[in-house]
Amino acid sequence: MKTYAFSFIVASIPGVAWTQAWPDGAPNRPGITPAFPSQTEAPVDITNPAPALSLVSEGLDTPWAIAVLPGMAGYLVTERDGHLRHVTRNGAISSPIAGLPDIFAQRQGGLLDITLSPDFARSRLLYLSYSAPDGIGRSATAAARARLSNDHTQLLDLVEIFRQSPAATAPGHYGSRIEPLPDGSLALTTGDRMRHAERAQDPATGYGAVIRIMPDGSPPNERPSVADALPGLVSYGHRNIQGIAHDPATGQLWTLEHGPAGGDELNLITPGGNYGWPVVSYGVNYNGREIGQGRAAHAPDFIPPRYYWDPVIAPGGMVIYDGDMFPAWRGDILAAGLVAQAVVRLDLADDRVIAEERLAEGIARVRDIAVDHDGAILFVTDEGPRSRLMRLAR
Image (cartoon, rainbow, N blue to C red; front, side, top):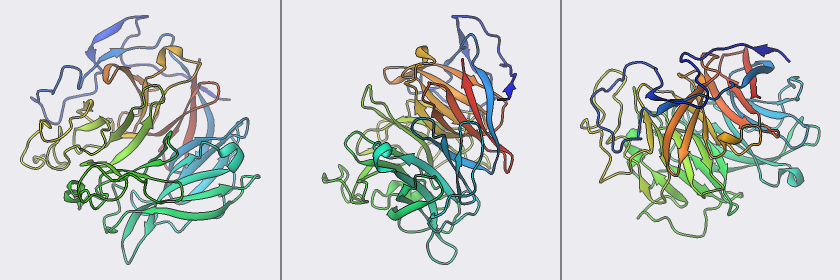
């Protein structure tokens, strides 16, 4: 296995947290007063000794998500152009797995998330999210359930279980993460689909939302806590959620969403909560103009993020670490950072971020994170046809 040497841009001091934030540049929206002291710019905390970085596999094409198979069976990796690959533990990449649904692979669209059913070892069930073609020039965030064949070569009995409606013409902001929940349901994330941001404030559309469904696609029995909401709606007012994780220790559900220029958000999800997009934001439009009426403060009308970044990290997938290899990280959030080009570690105390670390900084755009059976960190890079599956370990 090939190893990589890398260095941090700040000095490493064993056991000492820095008082200043990670040095990542000037904000896009200066002069903002955070809602509470730990809402942004948490102090640096360096893991010492630094984890060792090694290459598992190279030659993936724009991967979007990774799932760890049971035992020594290796990994499943989605590629955005519409391919699903099996990667062995020694890094061999399979031919495309057969049996995928029709996929709209343009711009940000394509084959997106993959998540194993909690009973996968017995059932072989897994869940995929993707952008589905839906009318001329239109697409929608969708999810499907299927069984993986024992030889990892094909998907069987594929059934679509969710489709965002209405479809949209803009090929972006699909959201599209899937998280199994303890009650047997699934939490799905969606985006505002770019040119339709106002729909994120309409709970009936399921745009810019967290939505619960059962494994067969039916809504849960309970009614949404928001009037006239889409069945299964959990929260809304989000921009583009590309990270979600349930913390089994606390029962909390966390999400990560892309802001515009500035204003990436880490949110603690409250059922029925409205998170404010596109009325309020800690960022600005890419052309420098204000979002909505220029308001940053979310309260009292909307739920403020537990943490935000300006400049952005451009978050991808996330996990809440529960492995054995790095016991000091248990309960911390590990997030993929595309612009940050790092694995971003957030040290949590209750529901607040008290420190931040950038691991493997400068490696490449990082799209998704997983924890291997031994507690090592796996992540996929977004580098076109030479993308990599990497590993961070003791």
